Image (cartoon, rainbow, N blue to C red):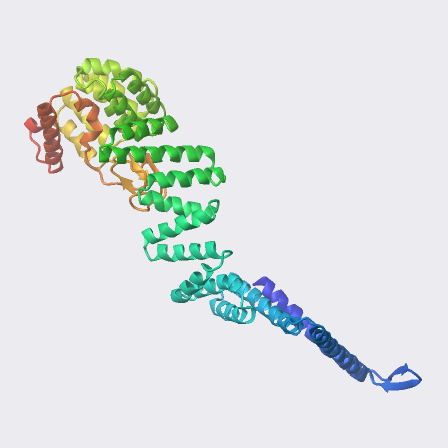
Length: 490
């Protein structure tokens, strides 16, 4: 805006100065004498200026005529394209000027002017390899997808513009939701220019969304080699791809491939919780319980998670509550002050019916960071120590409306997932799920799987009874009609 005002003021200033200059010349007395070859001409100041302009125009015309004469002479001497080149130079100059104006119009957002200039350049230059790109972009700006499609297809005919044409067609297919066609075009573009950053990003996103883990790994390696991604990011993504591959192999019954991919994922990203639990499962199946313990303990030291505790319990599924509590000390010791470790120790103490120990392990977690899980554990502690029904009911009532605590949340769109996945189910982003508290109030409710370490090792009947009684207590408390017998069972 300021620059436009400055240009307007400069233009007005020049116009005013020119007007004053002309008026001054007209009002200036005297004459100008021009002497040449013994002759003299007497001109007024204004006539002298007009004579100069006429002479310059005549000189320009003479130069043009001389240029044409030279071209004719060259043609007569055997240069068959001399005259054609003479006229083509002017045509080419006007064509490139139109092309330049079209590019400027695209950058300015003037779609109509861009389309007009692009059509003019295409007519004057007859160079589709140069004008097709501008014409396609101008058509897209005008919303004319059919015309843009025509230009993109023309670009496929020239080796120099084939890649740009493929990218344009791929973009159109993505906007129309034709992911399979877009993926096929992206693969063709990758074969032409395997180092193009935009194409690598789009290709990887489409491959991961289509669960093409092998193809996504090839694209990832190319991205790392071209330094599009740092090596640490590439290593992390490679781990996620290996984990996804392991899950796919498990679903298809390929145990050997599932085991290799799971162990590779854990080696690449030991802190990745799903990779650690699957690797521990593989070690347990192979009888390597010590390796399973090491994998889970290392993951717990960076990211304490209930799934790690469940996998750690599965190492010795039939041990007594006292033995389990003793064995779990090695796991929680790697992150003793983390809320997950405190909750786990409290749950283990509850399973061993050590209610004072459970209260000590939980500490002030239920007051300072109340969640459905911590409040439910606190209610169980009060029940075990013989607190009145009103006290227990108060903790359970708070648990019904309390936050659920950490969950798998997409860091890009904040969508909450019930389980980890390599690709966000909502926005399709790759490796964006993190174990953290939702930035908004999620649905509250007692999650029985949060106390899974307590249930593992009990017989099926005991697990069913415990789950049923807990559910009855929560439902009854919500309706303010719980009985002492139902609360006692919970």
